Amino acid sequence: MSPVGDDLAERVTDLEVRLAYQDRLIATLDEVVRGFAARVETLERELGEVRAGVKSPPVPIGPQSEKPPHY
Image (cartoon, rainbow, N blue to C red; front, side, top):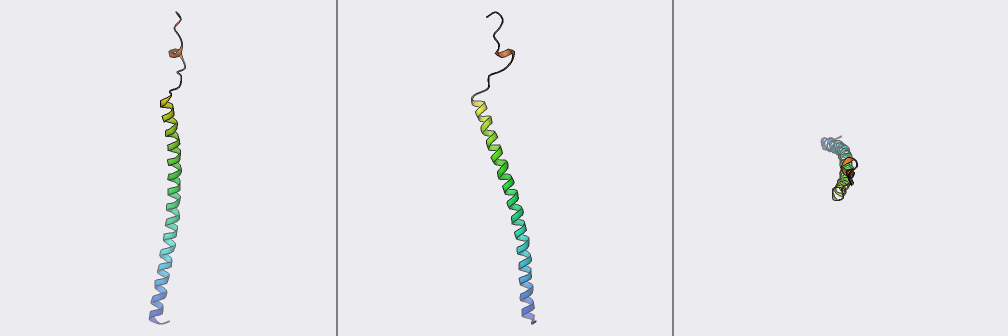
């Protein structure tokens, strides 16, 4: 091959290698983002449950909910 052809082939190979690394990085980052999204959804659901519990507290169970014996 000519020097120009060799240089072009080397540049294309370098670009292909860079693209392969970028594809792998994008796939890894996508997996991380999906994991965080799932965690955020879980935390939002749990926060909604906590807020609902604060608005309407459960009826206490035990001696504090019982009437004193003299009633």
